[in-house]
Length: 170
Ligand SMILES: CC(C)(COP(=O)(O)OP(=O)(O)OC[C@H]1O[C@@H](n2cnc3c(N)ncnc32)[C@H](O)[C@@H]1OP(=O)(O)O)[C@@H](O)C(=O)NCCC(=O)NCCS
Image 1 (cartoon, rainbow, N blue to C red):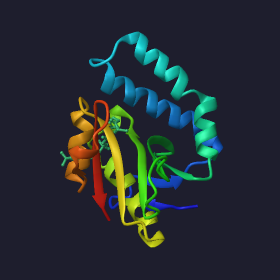
Image 2: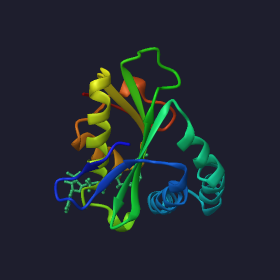
Image 3: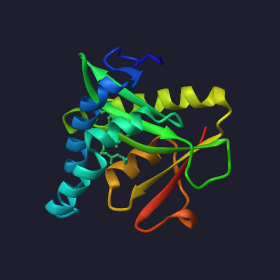
């Protein structure tokens, strides 16, 4: 178990277990809806929430050995999560993919996203991981601003289908 306290002791980060799935689902659904309400149709949002953020899908990915799920707790409730691991299409073993980082919208701007990235980096550095990349929907400026302020650099040559490729050297 990996536990870290953020500087003001408000946020506690642990590695997720199967019993955290409903808390993770709540954060992902609220966060996703908040970001995409103005960008995607209601139908598209409902379909994605059903398929990708179902309890069964999340339980599978929490238990998957090749990746790590971190959860951020505030006063005993899950308010954020971060999921990272081996890239699907990348033969560089020192590089990891950040699949997602979500904070519940009621808790944005309080340092939870930063605490999750800090713990991820502290976990990866001793494993000789030299860099982390992520893809962000080009319309999601909230996320791309967050990442670039935290040291990720946009490398446009590797963008794909409406998504920006951002990489951070650790
Ligand atoms: C992107 C996201 C994860 C950021 O999470 P967050 O918890 O709001 O991030 P933080 O609070 O750590 O940092 C955000 C900003 O708040 C500031 N901040 C940190 N602590 C703060 C505090 N106590 N009071 C006020 N501001 C604070 C940080 O300086 C940062 O500002 P800056 O980036 O403008 O410099 C969150 O907005 C989110 O869940 N978005 C939707 C999901 C998403 O798009 N994820 C990415 C793709 S998977």
